Image (cartoon, rainbow, N blue to C red; front, side, top):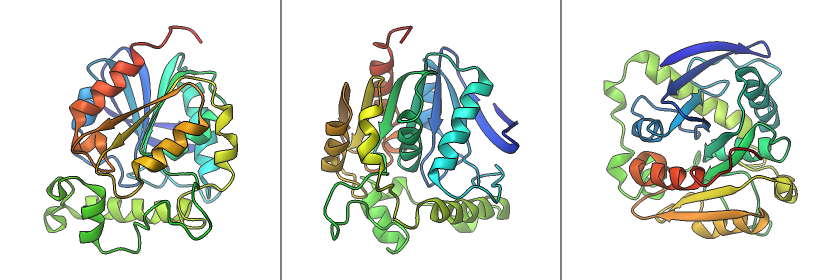
Length: 261
C-alpha cells in the first residue's frame, strides 16, 4: 500500500505492507526502487513502514533541510505521529546512517535496531577511505563493488519512463546534498554510538565493496549489546540481493526482542 502523509509540514510518501510488530525501514541512497522483494519478505512477520526520504521519490524537500540530523529528527516526529510503540528501527546504507542518528538521540519508541551496511562513521585515519566514493567512480565500477552479482544491480535506463528517471536523478541529487562533505559520514557520530541503549543487529554482505565487513566490525565494537550477521553472496545491498536471507536475519533478531523495553 502506498500513501502520503504530512509530518512537521513535510509531505512524505510511504510504502506499507504486512502486519505484526512495526518495522520502520529507512532505504539506502539508491532509493526504494520499484522492485521490492525484501519488503514482501519482511512483511510476512512485520508491519513494514518504508518512507521515501525527503527529496527522494515524490517526498518533498523543504529548503530548511540540509543535514542527516534534520532527517533523523523528522523521522522521530514520524514515529510519534504514527504512534509507534516497541517498533523495530531498520536502515540500510544511507538509511542505516539515519537510523543510527535517530537511535543516539531517542529510542523510546523502539525495541530494537537493525543496521544493514550503514554509512555514517569514520573509522580509519585522515587519509584512509572507509567508504567508497560512489559519486566519482564509473557506473560499471560501482556495480562491481556494490553487488556480488553485477546483473542484480543492472538497470535498463532506456526502458524507464521519464517520471522514474526524474525520481532517480532527484534522489541522487538529494543524497549528495546530505552526504557530500564530509563524504557520507558524521565525524562526531562514532563518539555517540555508546548512547544506543536497545539491542542492535548489524547485517553485512560478504562481498560488500562499498563498506567492508571490517567497517561493520568497527560499528559493532562501538555499540554495546550488538550482534552481526554476514550474508553470503551479497554485496552492499543485502536486502535486495538476498531478500530471504536478509528477512531471516531480521526476523531471527526481532523474534527475540522483549515486548517491553
